[in-house]
Image 1 (tube, rainbow, N blue to C red):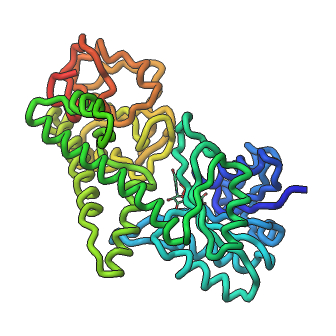
Image 2 (image 1 turned 180 degrees about the horizontal axis):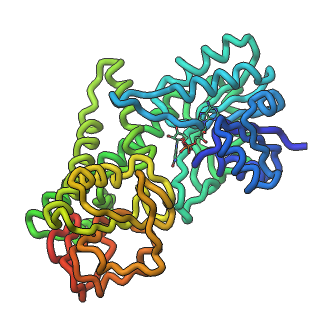
Image 3 (image 1 turned 45 degrees about the vertical axis):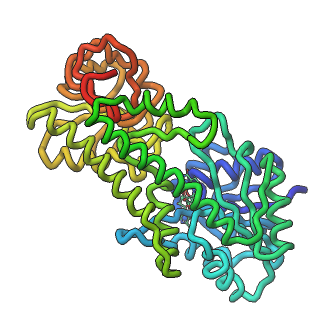
Length: 401
Ligand SMILES: NC(=O)c1ccc[n+]([C@@H]2O[C@H](COP(=O)([O-])OP(=O)(O)OC[C@H]3O[C@@H](n4cnc5c(N)ncnc54)[C@H](O)[C@@H]3O)[C@@H](O)[C@H]2O)c1
């Protein structure tokens, strides 16, 4: 009989993990505070994962407990550990002595040692404890969970051994680091790296638009250098639960220890500036009576995730001017009080302005070539000549495709 595992939080991270363990024959419970989530998992998984909103039904029977709850920031851009706190509270109440508890949520270096461990110690029970950040890229078909090397750490050697054994059952390669704060820092460095480089690409895009240079051609050319260059591409601004959020966990902790984090703040500012720039391109190229179509409100292609999507700020900027706006997103039926239009009988020419914010695969079916209005392409999606419209490309400028 295989070990029993409870995954706490069945979201973008927790559910694929639960499925991976279930597929290897583990007994897998999912504990989630959302009734809706539990209902949907139980319907879809048909007994392969037992989801519940009752922690006592699963945690006390588990050898391993993995916490995958959200780690957002508050309006002051400070870490909000309330989800971790409440999850650890519940786990603390019910875990059996000798269990292994692992945190996967992205957080600042020191969280496990300073926040999680003392609370578990208070229970008086024995436990193994580790941190292993999740690197999953939802929607990425080339790198599914099992193919992404997993960083692992433990508060002591025994804990590390437990964590290593567990993940080795589902992941091709595990990468040990010497302590939990190194593992926490590794995840943040990966996302700071992306945030800073995407923002750099966005800044270059805004510069090159003014100079009549195609940023994409520049990047393709620069990419031919065999070392020391890695391509990042512009877009309408950074979105999602991770890249716009996680760097601020490091910035906050840096402040606590008296260090500065200028790149992180700057990356956030440039991303915001790019989103405002897209909104401005729409407003200056339309008038109050223009009908506008937004293509894609998810923050990235082929997934339904709208968290921190640039679409939100853009819609706010436009609604203020009372413009008539529709959106189409095959993954997101409702967004910010609007309902997605149907793609079936869509005629782009009903709109004075079409703005492509997300490069969903489905949009390749749309007939951009016969469109005659203003087309704003934030993803270098519509490539090639023969357009009848006025084309504005982020990083490319007016009339270049
Ligand atoms: N989404 C990603 O692509 C991604 C990638 C890598 C790492 N991460 C990190 O993983 C963590 C989880 O992110 P996510 O995207 O899966 O979040 P999510 O919002 O998709 O899922 C979190 C789930 O946890 C549940 N939950 C919240 N508090 C709970 C509690 N106290 N007890 C039980 N369940 C609770 C919620 O109902 C929800 O279903 C975050 O720290 C995030 O930064 C996310």
